[in-house]
Image 1 (cartoon, rainbow, N blue to C red):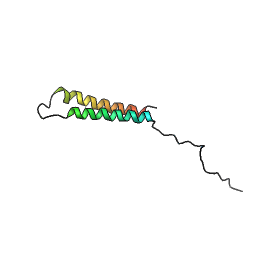
Image 2: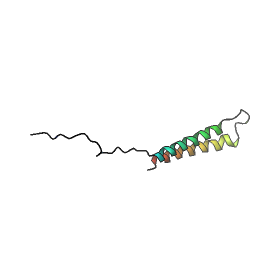
Image 3: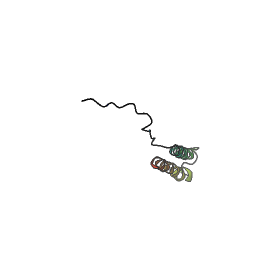
Image 4: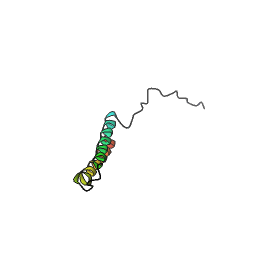
Length: 75
């Protein structure tokens, strides 16, 4: 029997991206939050057990990672 030949697929199938522009914006914001957390961890060698280094900075970094997960999973 004769084989059926299909032509090239042009505009029938649209390629759909997984991430939208909003997802990329949220990911950039989450990377900035993580960077701020690491900047808060830096400092002089004077007092390494202060509130900023031991509690505030790790919480900021963890919240940045959590925000990044939200940015990835957001539809």
